Length: 239
Image (cartoon, rainbow, N blue to C red; front, side, top):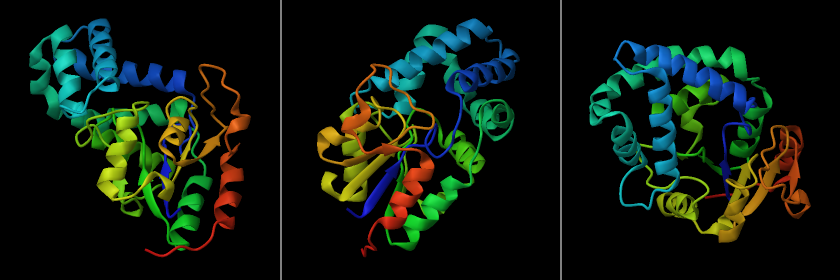
């Protein structure tokens, strides 16, 4: 094993998901009122678009799938406003941080420890956000984009978690086999499914998401602090 895949939200970036989503949709709605979108219709369109990305079959990018599905709800003119959405993630989106996010220095410490040992790192956040939105949340977590060989964005990926195609797409892009990789995440459904391909896994329990009440004793698990010490005990690797 010489490659570590990290989820972001709830893993390297501790947050309260319900509070995050509420604040996110509020700020996005306020941004888009000036474009003529009614807030409830916009939120519905975004949720339909997210569901379409989660069900994507690899034939289109997640970005294209999102705008296709959202456009069917709110009008295809939504595509014309892509620059406004990018601007949102560079500006208003940052207001969400103070309400829903509790950054920890452990995130950067885990990354530093693994890089020092020679591990290749992938930011395997669900590919349902544009690059600007992911880079914003990475900044909140104190992470540097250059520390990661790959960051999974909706522009570049054509599958989303928990579809195993998402993990296969990562493996293809980094030229690795499942047994070369460790997936670290806080969502039993979306992150631990990587084990089905043969990846090692580590379940982060600080912000645990376990919708189906799965017995987590089957997974190596612990807090992010526990993972930090786990990382320190890993062997040095070379590429």
